[in-house]
Length: 393
Image: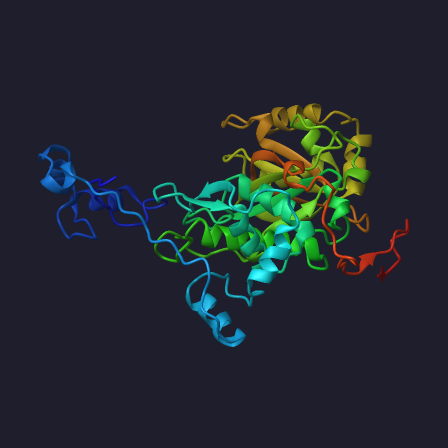
């Protein structure tokens, strides 16, 4: 839409009232015109001929294939075109993309979704093939594609264009976690796991390329977020959780595979203790936003369970009553996940807000997850109860 725009100076948050009055009585920093005169004119002057006969501008589509070149030149071209996150990629050749597409039974030209990193820009559509291109670039294999397609189908970017520098998170539930070798235990949020890493990186690359993230234009994070290279990605440690699984809480069956998406600003690690300690950490993070997602090692989860909180709803009610906050707290905005390796009773607290849970199974081929003859797996922690074991292949 060809709208009339006026802009105050920035920032508008956490500045004095005198500063804000100065903005109102001052000039638009873009046009240089007095701000209030500009606003009044925009609201009252008749439409111009150009505004009455607006032309819809469509951004040109990229060619499906690039001319052949050396790997070094193509890596440089992708980098300079802004199609990567700054790290080297796996070049998406036709052969590699065709192989990736064996990871799903869907038509390569089927539209998966629409994405933009900002709500005021055009949302671009993308197909199964384009998702596969970005999966190849991220270093994924066909077995990872159903989870990546599920993320793509959410239409949600991992890089929302907030000046506040968001981070994003994916939690995977169901059989697909183990099918593709995701880490739900020790060091689940990285590093040391191939599936977690490439799935998270694919989401970032899709956000850049489908969401049209351009620094200083459509993407305005003032600091950025180091988590955004791969995002926070893991599976819930379903086998060690004393409570109903997260996707079951959201209406799915235990045997169904899903992804759940979150975003927020803060991740505070190394909390130790039970329910009282978790509450104090939440209070320290601040109750004003009202969004909390707690990541509990199984040792912490079972401690809280044995303290009498066998029902998560009762735990949420206890937290809300104890908080006595002037801001309304919604139990739907307080979430718990069990993840970790039981080597220390540690939890992490975040202000991440949950958006929604999407199914993975619809993207899996009829004959099951497409795996390599010998699937790639990084070393995993040995299963032992005393926590003294190392890693094995």
